[in-house]
Image (cartoon, rainbow over all chains, first blue to last red; front, top):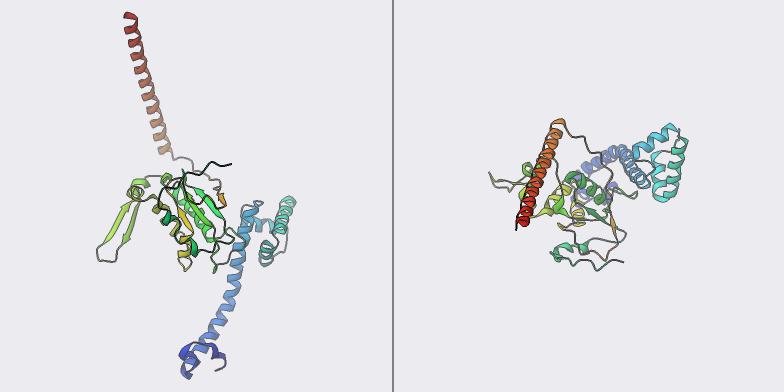
Length: 103
Length: 204
């Protein structure tokens, strides 16, 4: 446990009482935030996809894009879409065009 | 081919304040024209651009918004009776010192503060808020000292204006009819005068 606390700050890594407390808190945070991490990243992807769809003007917003994705039974999830939006903006444009026309 | 841009009268120091602190590498300079725009609707668009939420590379811990230049702040419009009835309140910290100021008075003192308050209060209250404030430059007239930068005008999204309420519409129609009547009366009065002077000339 002392090695787990070896990069804590001040008394939190030197004094036994503090080490036990702080290590416990660290584990609790870690457990709780593993669940939060999934939420946070999905939020980030949604914001990015929203921004990207508004640039290309094929769809007016993220909501319309997702609606059309579901209508056409595409299983691209938001993580992939967000990466596509950042790295390959043209691909996102073609995907959304394809969806719109198939519609 | 642009003619020499009008010389920037006004506080140059204030306009260029803190520009060095901002990392201006990939940022665009967006120009918002506030003439005739509704205050809150414009402010929400500015806030979105300022946070960088219109870029696919948005990250919440990084400040990546574009520079926003707002022109013609004194021509901003508000609906309803907000010009006289919207009051800005603030408390100085001393007991009993709740101060207030109306929109009208604020526009007389400093029209840029109106837009600045509106935008700042729409930004999230976190550590990036001050940096975003530094990226926002507001000018009450149409001149600005940033003519040597690559400026991009911002096109406001189309707005669905709500249909006028029946009472307001009736008031508007009454006002228009009154104006027409006044104009007709003025014209007829002018015609009479003209005919009188014509008669005078003829007599002479």
